[in-house]
Length: 412
Image (cartoon, rainbow, N blue to C red; front, side):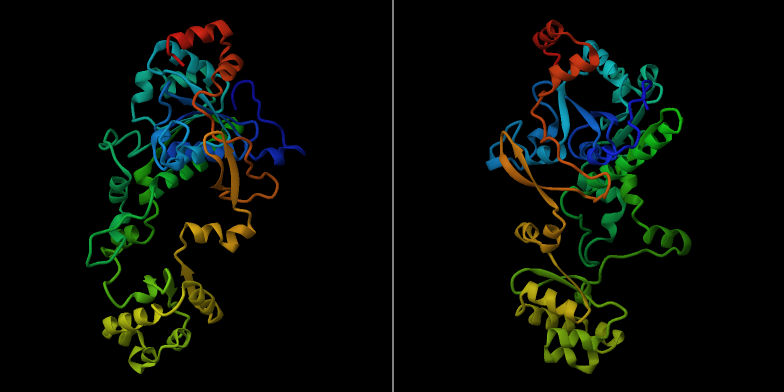
């Protein structure tokens, strides 16, 4: 912990405050991966102070979707989700006085998380060496596209580029088509989650007396680490895992039903007769489909028969019937389905968050339930610079007159 060690001892009130209660985090991140990492700390009890650029703030503030499609710095729904339970401080880190104030804040934190391009912190005067000079026990977590070292470390990248470079894209989609990327920004959220658990490990070491350390998170590597089949297969046997075949794989693929998309999987323990009985479609009972070899030989005919039958069935009808027949099945749930999902509702997954710009909106809630140290929503996402006077006064000894001077100089 920081030199004055403020992590509380376990006690009767600690659970209500979350497992990271007492942990102080300085958040120098923007957009998705870094803010998601610090959100996990904040939502589980940590005191997270987010440093943003004066006037414009975190780039996520200008990222859609916006409330009522009206762009402004407080209306980004992405920003509102990623920054619950944090405090916002505006500070110009490109100026000497701003850096000095940031170092004052570092003196009293346990963790600093940043997502600048590699080398930026050093140029600003906030590199790991400078941080350790004022707080030897501090943990610095850096999240970047390719990591802090290596020939690609300075390259820019998008979600699409990282999916391609991480290798997962090569095994996604059909073999007769181009590779596919999964939806949204899963590489960013995955890297944020990995950064959070790695940082938590460093904090545990910190509490055991290990000196502060630098946690280097590469988004590319977090994706590559998921390739637990194709990388060993290639390394050990020279084999290459391909994408799905263009036909004959309907029962392991997404398929259209009468009112949406469904997944029906034919597991090894299942019998073909159970599938034919479930779908209740006479052509599927033909003996030529009864064996794996027969289904492969008549793949296109099989896919056509399945598609014809599914077009007559509702997605939830299929879902319920499949589970009665002990077959794997799922529905490609759309937003309306998720909001009404009885499983998510039964676990109180969604939470209402009241924000002065957007009013009350439902947000995804706890990614993990913990019986004694729960996830809590203590505060909605901050307005830009909302906590600047309070934090600078309490933690950097900035007086009211000094603060007014900083504002006049556009330093905060």
